[in-house]
Image 1 (tube, rainbow, N blue to C red):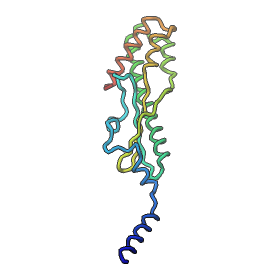
Image 2: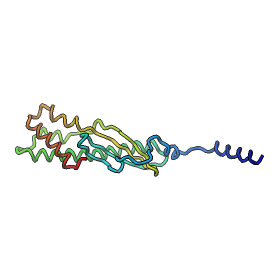
Image 3: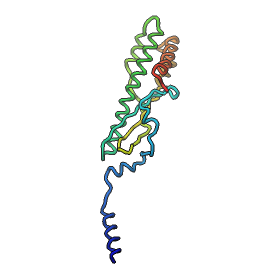
Image 4: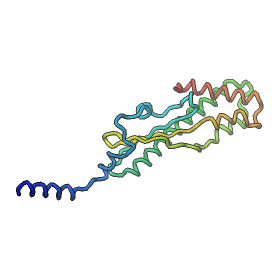
Length: 174
């Protein structure tokens, strides 16, 4: 009889308990036992894939959706910094290779750019509840302008391609 009461009490307590948002968060399908490499690498320019990657993180207890969105926004801000460095290095390399000075059309191309086509690739939640987000921007469409933009002559397009490739090297792209 005493065992039956203890068992009933245990079942009653178990049935009344509920999970908290933090419990749901810790069992999220994006949580992995070990952090992926990109978490420790941070935002990078990848020469092999001709892409830029941004990593952002934030911890907002109990706010799963907000934390993921905020981490993604921070990753996009970090990606913008990588892109700005890439464009500045490409412009500098182009200017150094252009004895007659920089063409105003080229200046305009470097002055006006937007980050379109950013992909959300992955998220990771560590044991402390910090959410990390990884985003990617493929730079091949930007670089393809060097081959297809008829407003530049062949020599300018060649110098732009070389300047872009050198930017990857100058910035220590992996």
